[in-house]
Image 1 (cartoon, rainbow, N blue to C red):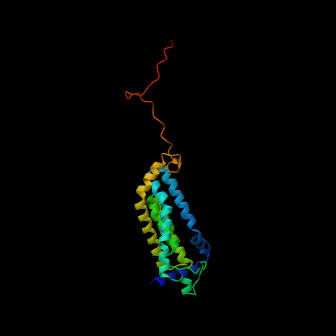
Image 2: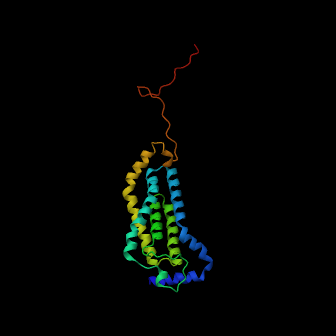
Image 3: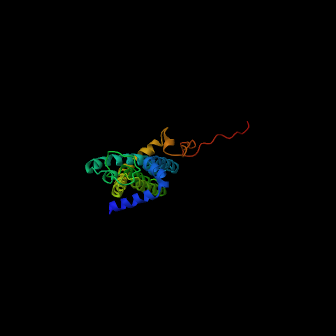
Length: 215
């Protein structure tokens, strides 16, 4: 069934040469889009001045990199050949490489980014999820991966990212709050520092200047 679905996508690729440049470009360089979305997530969280959102935005790239790192032992353990190695007669748009196919690193990255950004903004998480699905499809379209490589990669990335954010967000939130009291405050909030309040007398009332009587 998985190979059958791969063949269907490959036939679609053969029938849509006008899509080749766009899909190949996204499959190779779509990571730049995810980086831009993460930057937008940080900017959005900073403007809300909500420490937990800012913490999630800070953790999003960390969780994504950790997810890709966690994937490496699985790639080495399964040793699954690329589709173009096992099926020499298919259309190949991917740059051929000698590394392994399962799970897809690009899909792990995309799934992790979408899951992590969900904690920053539901809307931003949904947009990233659509971009992640497009990334997964593009990797099949260019014949770099089978569908199960992509599906497992998306799920693995999402699971790792959710665990990282849930476990690290409490500490990171406290760190963000502490940073807001330092010279680095603009990195975690768009709100200006709270101005000092009026001088208060010992009796607890605001001290007012003496009235000018003109004498």
